[in-house]
Image 1 (cartoon, rainbow, N blue to C red):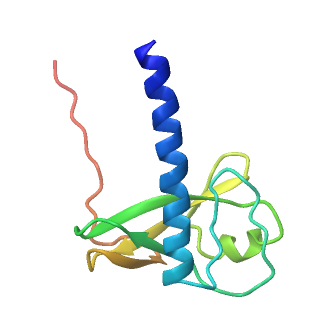
Image 2 (cartoon, one colour):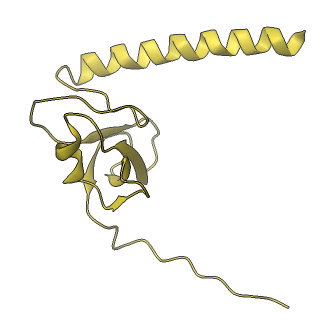
Length: 120
């Protein structure tokens, strides 16, 4: 029963938190349009992709974006890799200034490639 109650409370907190974040983004970036990663992106306006780094730490992140809907062509120009099937892609966001807005950019030249070694 405790888990059932916790699930309901967490769902409510998540819903309220999402509403607060959306209100904050509307105040900070009034003309912004959210890009839900698993829904078609619909827009006819021009613009650029920005992301908000809510941490005080510099970040380089990979974000998933939809490549379906009326605004898909705008997103395709920012995508560095398209997922299998072509319905989504990935952009690289540079928020190395710490908290605040980050912008999409090309490949991260300063990230070392992963390497592996077989033992035994």
